[in-house]
Image (cartoon, rainbow, N blue to C red):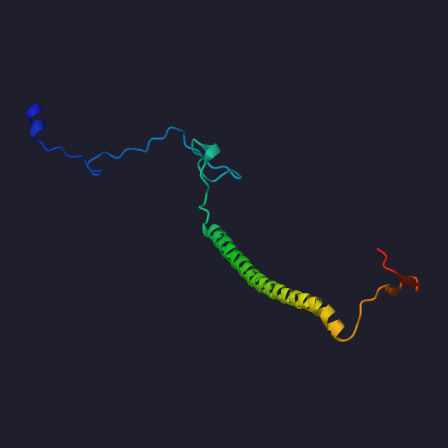
Length: 147
Protein backbone atom coordinates (compact mmCIF):
# COMPACT_ATOMS: atom_id res chain seq x y z
CA UNK A 1 0.00 0.00 0.00
CA UNK A 2 2.76 2.47 0.79
CA UNK A 3 4.47 1.55 -2.48
CA UNK A 4 1.35 2.42 -4.40
CA UNK A 5 1.15 5.78 -2.75
CA UNK A 6 4.77 6.53 -3.43
CA UNK A 7 4.40 5.86 -7.14
CA UNK A 8 1.11 7.66 -7.62
CA UNK A 9 1.57 11.31 -8.61
CA UNK A 10 0.53 13.77 -5.98
CA UNK A 11 -2.08 16.22 -7.16
CA UNK A 12 -4.69 18.32 -5.51
CA UNK A 13 -8.23 17.13 -6.01
CA UNK A 14 -10.27 19.37 -8.34
CA UNK A 15 -13.54 20.90 -7.29
CA UNK A 16 -15.41 18.49 -9.48
CA UNK A 17 -13.74 15.58 -7.63
CA UNK A 18 -14.73 16.90 -4.20
CA UNK A 19 -18.12 16.25 -2.79
CA UNK A 20 -20.36 19.31 -2.49
CA UNK A 21 -20.31 20.58 1.04
CA UNK A 22 -22.68 23.04 2.59
CA UNK A 23 -21.00 26.29 3.61
CA UNK A 24 -20.10 26.31 7.24
CA UNK A 25 -21.37 29.11 9.41
CA UNK A 26 -20.42 29.86 12.95
CA UNK A 27 -23.66 31.69 13.56
CA UNK A 28 -27.13 30.56 12.97
CA UNK A 29 -28.79 32.14 9.93
CA UNK A 30 -30.04 35.69 10.45
CA UNK A 31 -33.18 37.14 9.03
CA UNK A 32 -33.67 40.78 8.17
CA UNK A 33 -36.35 42.68 10.01
CA UNK A 34 -38.12 45.74 8.74
CA UNK A 35 -36.44 48.98 9.71
CA UNK A 36 -33.17 47.22 10.53
CA UNK A 37 -29.83 47.30 8.78
CA UNK A 38 -29.69 45.48 5.48
CA UNK A 39 -26.10 44.32 5.79
CA UNK A 40 -24.48 41.65 7.93
CA UNK A 41 -22.44 42.99 10.75
CA UNK A 42 -18.95 41.63 11.13
CA UNK A 43 -16.90 41.01 14.20
CA UNK A 44 -15.55 44.58 14.38
CA UNK A 45 -18.62 46.77 14.28
CA UNK A 46 -16.97 49.63 16.18
CA UNK A 47 -14.22 50.00 13.58
CA UNK A 48 -15.89 49.08 10.35
CA UNK A 49 -14.77 50.43 7.01
CA UNK A 50 -16.74 53.17 5.33
CA UNK A 51 -19.53 51.99 3.06
CA UNK A 52 -18.23 53.93 0.05
CA UNK A 53 -14.78 55.16 -0.90
CA UNK A 54 -14.30 58.92 -0.66
CA UNK A 55 -13.20 60.80 -3.72
CA UNK A 56 -9.76 62.43 -3.76
CA UNK A 57 -10.86 65.16 -6.15
CA UNK A 58 -11.79 67.74 -3.44
CA UNK A 59 -8.45 67.22 -1.73
CA UNK A 60 -6.53 67.62 -5.00
CA UNK A 61 -8.54 70.74 -5.87
CA UNK A 62 -7.83 72.19 -2.41
CA UNK A 63 -4.09 71.50 -2.74
CA UNK A 64 -3.97 72.96 -6.26
CA UNK A 65 -5.88 76.06 -5.11
CA UNK A 66 -3.53 76.59 -2.17
CA UNK A 67 -0.50 76.15 -4.41
CA UNK A 68 -1.84 78.55 -7.03
CA UNK A 69 -2.82 81.10 -4.38
CA UNK A 70 0.61 80.99 -2.76
CA UNK A 71 2.33 81.39 -6.13
CA UNK A 72 0.22 84.44 -6.94
CA UNK A 73 0.94 85.92 -3.48
CA UNK A 74 4.68 85.41 -3.94
CA UNK A 75 4.52 87.00 -7.41
CA UNK A 76 2.69 90.06 -6.07
CA UNK A 77 5.11 90.35 -3.15
CA UNK A 78 8.13 90.07 -5.44
CA UNK A 79 6.74 92.71 -7.82
CA UNK A 80 6.02 95.09 -4.95
CA UNK A 81 9.50 94.65 -3.50
CA UNK A 82 11.09 95.22 -6.91
CA UNK A 83 9.07 98.41 -7.39
CA UNK A 84 10.13 99.60 -3.93
CA UNK A 85 13.75 98.81 -4.74
CA UNK A 86 13.65 100.88 -7.93
CA UNK A 87 12.01 103.77 -6.09
CA UNK A 88 14.60 103.60 -3.31
CA UNK A 89 17.42 103.62 -5.86
CA UNK A 90 15.93 106.68 -7.59
CA UNK A 91 15.52 108.51 -4.27
CA UNK A 92 19.11 107.73 -3.25
CA UNK A 93 20.32 109.13 -6.59
CA UNK A 94 18.22 112.29 -6.01
CA UNK A 95 19.63 112.67 -2.48
CA UNK A 96 23.18 112.37 -3.83
CA UNK A 97 22.49 115.00 -6.51
CA UNK A 98 20.94 117.34 -3.93
CA UNK A 99 23.94 116.89 -1.61
CA UNK A 100 26.29 117.84 -4.48
CA UNK A 101 24.17 120.92 -5.24
CA UNK A 102 24.22 121.99 -1.58
CA UNK A 103 27.97 121.47 -1.39
CA UNK A 104 28.49 123.58 -4.53
CA UNK A 105 26.29 126.39 -3.19
CA UNK A 106 28.11 126.41 0.16
CA UNK A 107 31.43 126.72 -1.67
CA UNK A 108 30.04 129.65 -3.68
CA UNK A 109 28.88 131.31 -0.45
CA UNK A 110 32.31 130.91 1.17
CA UNK A 111 33.99 132.49 -1.84
CA UNK A 112 31.51 135.39 -1.82
CA UNK A 113 32.06 135.99 1.92
CA UNK A 114 35.84 136.00 1.55
CA UNK A 115 35.78 138.61 -1.20
CA UNK A 116 32.97 140.72 0.34
CA UNK A 117 35.33 143.09 2.26
CA UNK A 118 37.51 143.68 -0.79
CA UNK A 119 34.54 144.37 -3.07
CA UNK A 120 32.94 146.73 -0.53
CA UNK A 121 36.18 148.75 -0.17
CA UNK A 122 36.50 148.86 -3.96
CA UNK A 123 33.03 150.44 -4.05
CA UNK A 124 34.08 153.03 -1.45
CA UNK A 125 32.37 151.59 1.59
CA UNK A 126 33.89 151.79 5.06
CA UNK A 127 33.09 149.67 8.12
CA UNK A 128 30.57 151.24 10.52
CA UNK A 129 31.98 152.03 13.92
CA UNK A 130 28.69 152.25 15.78
CA UNK A 131 25.99 150.40 13.86
CA UNK A 132 22.37 151.44 14.38
CA UNK A 133 19.51 149.01 13.83
CA UNK A 134 15.74 149.01 14.02
CA UNK A 135 14.05 146.30 16.06
CA UNK A 136 11.30 144.68 14.03
CA UNK A 137 9.40 143.52 17.12
CA UNK A 138 9.24 146.78 19.00
CA UNK A 139 9.98 149.32 16.22
CA UNK A 140 12.71 151.03 18.32
CA UNK A 141 16.09 152.16 17.06
CA UNK A 142 18.82 150.17 18.75
CA UNK A 143 22.39 151.46 18.78
CA UNK A 144 25.49 149.44 19.47
CA UNK A 145 26.00 145.74 19.27
CA UNK A 146 23.98 143.73 21.75
CA UNK A 147 24.65 140.09 22.29
